[in-house]
Length: 246
Ligand SMILES: [Zn+2]
Image 1 (spheres, rainbow, N blue to C red):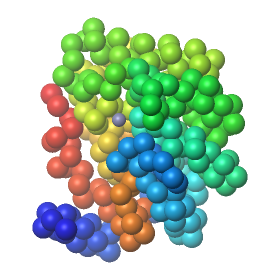
Image 2: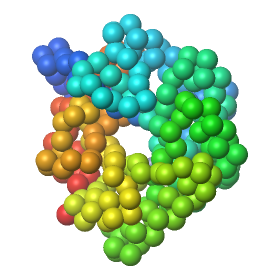
Image 3: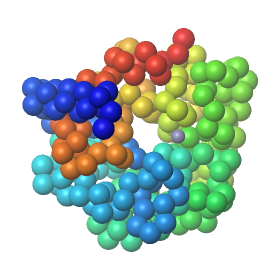
């Protein structure tokens, strides 16, 4: 293990021991796999099952919508990889609710969910389909007209598939700024998700409609418990510098 990673693990452990909180949080992944893995970012279904058990065993509740300040967890998956569909039974049997952010230009491509799979997942009632833009480009680096295009096209494609409104979006590569927030808001996205870690109700720069999320796809059981109790917040300031581009 690299020294930097070792330090990060040690630091999050101390942070966890010191501040462990039961605040409601979003935990996010990119994919799960049993046999076929479509991305290096995928979590094995066995580890994912362990994460779910830890959530339950520690008295947190998996929810569709976080409404309470404490003890609620919402799970999200980014990019729209197919592994979720391969493991659909697990989600349905255990009634695990997931919000998926789809890159619409990749729908139906190798390793990604198809239109009919997205529709089937939506219909099951266990999945909320949301936007991750059309092309997954860093929005903070695009001109206004291109940001609007990315937002609008993906919204139209998803609404056409599920015949329902889409009003949630998450930022590709986590990058955003105040201009991006306003432009996405103008296209009807009133809930926007960053990749900055922390509790659900903790605001970023006092902005109301932008949420924090904790990436847990590489967590083993020990790290996952730390993330569950808010240890990733330690990384907030450092990531803010990298992901909030003026
Ligand atoms: Zn992404």
